[in-house]
Length: 210
Image 1 (cartoon, helix red, strand yellow):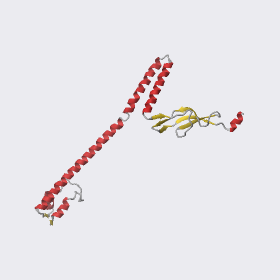
Image 2 (cartoon, rainbow, N blue to C red):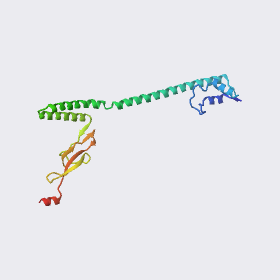
Image 3 (cartoon, rainbow, N blue to C red):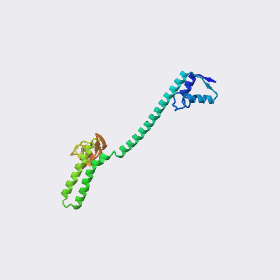
Image 4 (cartoon, rainbow, N blue to C red):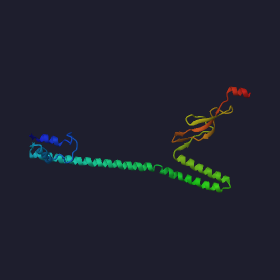
């Protein structure tokens, strides 16, 4: 049985599964193709020009396959490197935060030592105020802002009412006490302030008083 060069070229362009375009390394050279068909009792007939053309095509395909393998290896290495870098970033993501917070810890430890030895509690109060100022400054640099409460009109978006005081002497809805501070992070509420607000006395209560 004879196969023409065009048919051989089509076989050469096929991958190991017989589907066009699939890469195969050193599996489709003209020499190996001849051996394959010789073993099957087939005779391959082609001119020297066709033979040289097929040889060039086989070499080109091998080069493309090598590039494909190298690209695949480089891609896998890049993924591994990315995973290592991501792990390192996550592991040390809070490094700057902790470094900035350590001076506050130092101040707390210093105050603790002074409290144990202190006879002047005014000095202790000053020390505590200093630490509180450090904390507020630290939070501000992170974009954390304390929510204003006492004396402000109740805003359900930033205030959480936990207690009510009834009075006719103050405007209803005015915050008279902050039970827990609220905070925003870059304008977003991360914790509403827990507050006590004014509520007008009911008419029944006013009548009972009178």
